[in-house]
Amino acid sequence: MSAVRLVLLGRQGAGKGTQAVRLSEHYGAPHISTGDMLRSAVAEGTEFGRKAAEIMARGDLVPDDVIIGVVTERLAKDDARDNGFLLDGFPRTVAQAEALNELTAGSGLHAVINIDVPLDEVRERMRQRGRDDDTDEAIDRRLELYESETAPLISFYEAAGLMVQVDGLGSMDEVFVRLVAAVDGSTSAS
Ligand code: ADP
Image 1 (cartoon, rainbow, N blue to C red):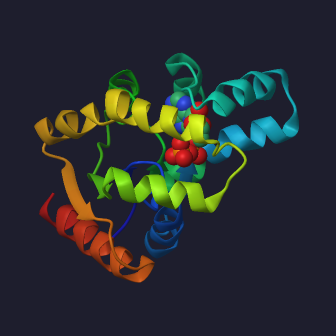
Image 2: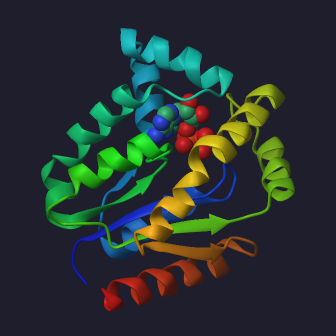
């Protein structure tokens, strides 16, 4: 199969990042993580990076127009044009999803996959991973924003006939096998 164009959704701590890396290798499509891109900007210490760092430390979302600009530039690069993409962490709001629709107007998305893990379980996983921005307050804020801003994307993409739910409980390998089955099922149907 050539050039898959996928979006991965899932609560923080659902295993999205890890699975995105594996899926990216499996399908030969670049893994585009807005969180990783923002963290590199922070590490570079640019003006933009400093602003992003404050927002991320609070667990808030970077403004839509800013992140849409970042993703627009990234998707215009040759690797994404030629080999498709696996978006991880974008879109996170309906405005971002609408922008992505415009960006992919010619080619379209193959599927949007939600890695489903219950709230109690992700809360526990996040406490254990102990990333710098994983303070209790930031965790609560990020999960709250996920429910209010990002969860509505599930109905948005259901309406578009693109939504696929995958059970995110179990080992990394078990979840990976389910994801590949979900992607292959949806891309062969389209
Ligand atoms: P997590 O899934 O644990 O929130 P990410 O690495 O995806 O981790 O994102 C880290 C932070 O980067 C988010 O809390 C948010 O502040 C910012 N961010 C990432 N992607 C987006 C986006 N699409 N829109 C707005 N902010 C974003």
